[in-house]
Length: 438
Ligand SMILES: Cc1cc2nc3c(=O)[nH]c(=O)nc-3n(C[C@H](O)[C@H](O)[C@H](O)COP(=O)(O)OP(=O)(O)OC[C@H]3O[C@@H](n4cnc5c(N)ncnc54)[C@H](O)[C@@H]3O)c2cc1C
Image (cartoon, rainbow, N blue to C red; front, side, top):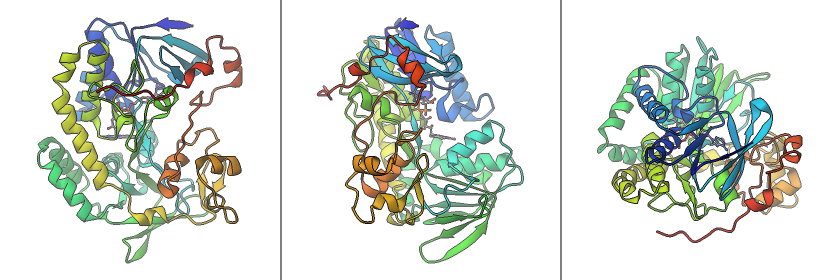
């Protein structure tokens, strides 16, 4: 099955919704695809409620619904080239093809995980992952939960879990208070964020929030029953039923890489109009750098307007976007990883969970590994179903190894689907990075 649109948006989170609504509002024929059954992305997936986030979601969804943009939910984009992409429709076990003039990538971010002894025990979750499970009905009532790692998500997750009946034993934020204080100064010009922080702290009253504190090990035989925490001087044990642990976020850049877009340390490189280095391909939201929901929304709007040829309207939003991006950079500095959390893995600690590759295998006891490709060839690290989405960012943080080659399909699909897809042509997917015009 093949569809033709002027503009296709991949991702229906805040950035994708804003992009699709803006482009459709300019009379362009727009499709928005997301691999989830519901729109909203990571932050708004929960659905209707009464918080400020729920109202923002309602507004964004109403905007999309009242526009002419067409939503294709349950579509996982597995391959893309300028002009066309392939989406896997899991519910129907088939590939679907989309042709377009312009593509807007709004694929969001995911949590970063770092290996430490016990991190693969049942009961150890990503912080955002546990939040998503609870939103989906997982019962945490009466469970003792330690929330640890780094980033503003820890507070949001802890508040959410507490609201759902969990007992939050402690929040362990690895960033030192001196690093966070600088970020606090950045917040002074953003009363909305300060209010949000105050509200979260109030919801978490009585819960210890320890800065400069991190988990050194999760313990238990069949499942986690406790963790060891340290502040660098003292180490102590806390009993818990669940550990929610994530080390801030990393941008989802796989599709952009596949298209040949230039990627920097912080994410997909874009110009003022959110155009990437590949003609006709725009990028908005977290793949361009982790900066939060307000940045994602305004970037999406700019990308949608620019792709629809409305450069002047897009330019009127640059000031707001630039301020949000600056805020995101300050946030990344505040929650930068300390050296100690990169040294927690022991030789037998699993790093690649899909292929059971241990830290010792990666260090290469006799012959040191020279990089990502070498590690992959020698150990199968990153070659499992997640295709390096979990271990890749960890290897980057631990060893400075980057995955330089992304190949289609970017998510696993049945081989039969690949063989029977007449439109599937991976040859056209590899493009040389092009110069970006400012
Ligand atoms: C696990 C997690 C939990 C979070 N929870 C909170 C929170 O509670 N509060 C908060 O303020 N911020 C939270 N954030 C941060 C928040 O998600 C961002 O600030 C903001 O939502 C980014 O918007 P976005 O549109 O760029 O990306 P997202 O909201 O992530 O949207 C991207 C969408 O694209 C889809 N997608 C990606 N790749 C493909 C593909 N190949 N094919 C089809 N669809 C694809 C994704 O499934 C997703 O729906 C969370 C982030 C994560 C990763």
